[in-house]
Length: 236
Length: 293
Image (tube, rainbow over all chains, first blue to last red; front, side, top):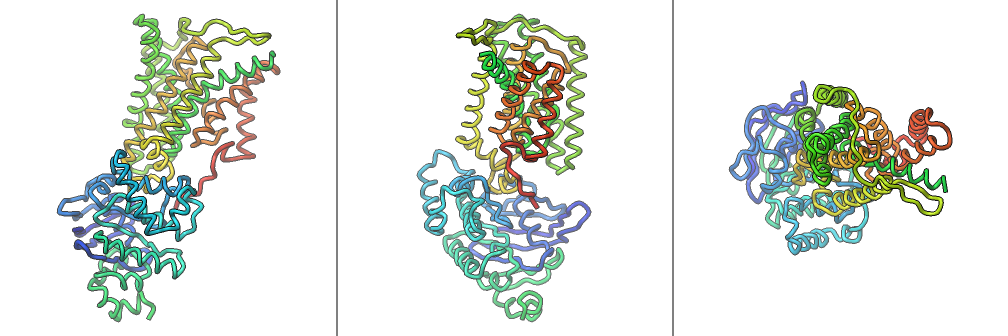
């Protein structure tokens, strides 16, 4: 469904991704794990079109998106929940969700209400706070909002960048339960995480990145048992 | 009564500042650029009006449309030709600023070449009479300025808060990267913002020419600078702030002229700017933006 081949991304003179490749099949949850600076977020931004690769190709549903503008990539069905949530702080919860549905026609009022209800059912706390400014929400609520906002575009594939960052263990569990529900709902998931243990526990497959290169890849269950992974990323 | 008259005169002048200040504020809100060429857009509007009204002899209703169209196009053209490449390549803020100054100098010299550097007089347009009530006496043009600016302000608020494009403008202003991830074409939003800001300046230009019937290629300098002061005073990036700053500046300027002396007007205006920035660096209605990482 998504195939990333040999991408090289630079920030000015810094060579951030040095020929990374990975692919995600329909219906999977795939994780990119690795330490700070491994290039996980850079890879996400390149897939969404916010950054450009100098080499290689990225295809989504068989079409190359390596040179496609970010807003068009969203229209093709690829939504991202960015690192640090990046909700629109001065807008209300509901306005944020409406922004998530930006690519859909404003005339589809019924579909919009239905999707709002879908998000509110999944995250009842957002419904209670629908008229509240997003900037006043707690970190966990903002993460829920960021996920809900991305789902409003009815994506075929969801990219999640560090959804567990800065959250308490209970909230992390809640967010990961939600990711699994999203998968059950038929949306493919690409997950970037520093919390490798949690990520591997819900993933089908995973890639371990190290300083901008592919280090290891395999079935998530195998990686959980891999001695190198355990020592470097699982603290065991 | 005299005080109320002066207050209304100040609001009339402030209406023009406010309309121009909105353009500075909106553009700053979206791309964090102080568009120093914005003041010259008013000059372009003034000449567009002059060409239609005096040289081509068009009827007034048709002539006033010319600055709207010409300024809107000029704003878009400036963004496309001068700023867009810098913006898409994340150029340094200072490069943008210098480019804006360059565009300003270019426009002034272009119009000196086209129309010579001496001032041109505009014919009387509308509202030349005086409205009198009790001891109150204000020109109709002052009242027109106030009414038009309020109508434009309401229109702009509706555009920004009620329409999908307006919401997309807010989102882009807050976090352009996140806006792109919502499927918003932020390039398009930037162009629309320049167009809307320039059209508001065009309306300001028509009102200015009607109130102070003289134009010259360098007229945008002080007018633009004062409108910029108004935008900063109100809190740059804030639409109600730009309006408030504009009215406040006009009133203060008029009261200084009436009750102190005309000579110190500009000194008072800029002194106020300095004081406000010392006390409230974000301006009267500005938010203290969190630095984005």
